[in-house]
Image (spheres, rainbow, N blue to C red):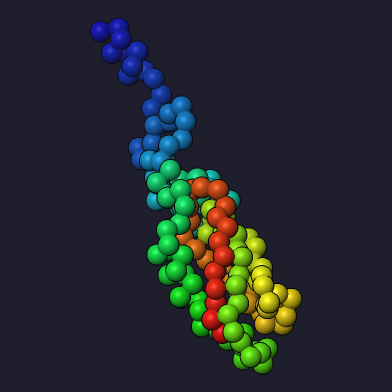
Amino acid sequence: AEAAKAEAAKPKAPAGTPAKTGGKDEVDDMLSGLSGKKPAAAAQQGGGNVVAPDDPLLPKKLGKAQILGVVRQNAGAVAGCKGETKSEGGTVFVDMQIVKSGSVEAAKVVGAQAGTPLANCVERKVKVFRFPQFNGPPMRIKLPFAM
């Protein structure tokens, strides 16, 4: 009976307030998203529904299909560099580094076309590609683009 009285005497949180626990977890993040508060990871990245790149559910690296999907989606913009620079075209090889947020941290044309106006245009276009997020180290890939 004493224990029941002691429990009843404890102050209670207002209705609708989740009980505090020792640390935050995924459920807290989801619930805070419902209440209009952004989880810390999303707030840091400036997005509303952004997944944290350290999310253990993300793949360790991008698959070939994911990479090629983004490349195909942006191929028109890259091919437009031929007309923009009035170049003869050919195949341009781009060495790029993709970080876990999905952004292209670096893009550099290598080979015969390196340093040309066409290369500069292609590098600018590739740097704005957005790949799916992943949870591993940066990925360095080299891809050919037909002009």
